[in-house]
Image 1: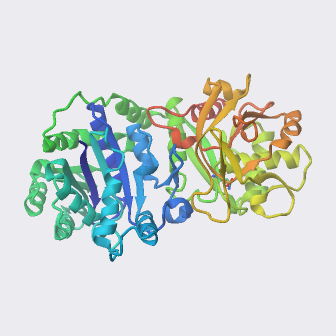
Image 2: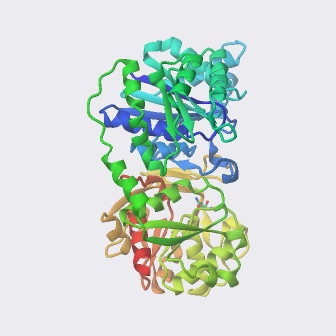
Length: 538
Ligand code: GLN
């Protein structure tokens, strides 16, 4: 039977619950156990798919096509385990399920209530599809004390009662601030947060204390005493220089050991920290750097392109070079300024995006990269913009556009309403926005003698998609005659998946999101190759 580890957060948000859970998953896995990580989010959206990056950062897409919280990206990158649809649930999803059931009369006339109906549904989700796991780590989004997260807190309390305390553990993450004026580390916020947790019936078994500086023994003892937790289970996490140090730091603090001791389970293997040590050393010691421009709508938001930022760093790790991201806001990019802005740039990247705003700047930047032979990577929307640029300037279709921007012009990129997935026709729509795009893993077949085939060293690939519009295949010959090759197609040959330029050192557009599959211990070949090309550019 799986053991369940629930991770809650207190005092403030953004304490790094995701990174702590992901690091713990790595350590347990490295000790020979099978681990799954899940996220329970307290907001009312059914999934984050319709949320703006301004609200929620990146939407992370899984192999099976779920639009999920970006923490699932952390989980995948650290644990190497591909997340599934069933690994992220929101209050909205839970209510949606319960209300659908109610409309069908499945509650047999009963009054439908938060307890037990909502909490029961949450509990079903927690234990769904985990028969083969040794550990299930469940992170509860939000902060203990919020009204929104109460049903989740209640559900995990009940869950522990249902499956037994010896099969469940509660880890609570809090902030232990340092007060400069008194030169002291303060434990009171932690005490209050644990009090709040205990008021809803949860006694934490481990407290992870996030702190700017090491926590002296006296303060740990105080936390142990007031919060009723063994001092060995008061674990500090001091800010690390790079996130790749996190698994090392938690190992040094014996987090995984304390978890195993709690469950009275013996480790199957020794933890292997060498890959993280190697990466940390590489990231901290590499001096040479390469400038990559990311031109997008949300570049100034820290988490809006989380997986992309990470994948580029992985590309740097693969090439022993630091990747400096130069973020250019597409809305503000004036065509006249492009030359100046891209002066010291060795690679241009246009990420995924939605809507017309800022597209003219992007198209002009692509034009500049194409003509000046600067390595270019266009991802999803970025590939669509590269197609429009080429159509306008090389095929002389001056009004080339995407039907995403309205009905005017020639739609080289257009809405498709049905497509083939492994022989089954799937219907899309733009009437309802949530979960209706072409989502998740789709296969692409790569052209012989193409750059892309060399990069992947494979004939077939499967990559994650998240888009509604497609490049119109009917233009293929026209583009190829002018030197833009459609170097990968869907298996039914109807959908262009990758484009590249013949007379350019490195110009690639992909209709999917390779960044979701890149991991620090296994950098994605596209990013490694892109950074290599950028490194060779100057
Ligand atoms: N807006 C474009 C589409 O829906 C691109 C989406 C994206 O970049 N993820 O097709």
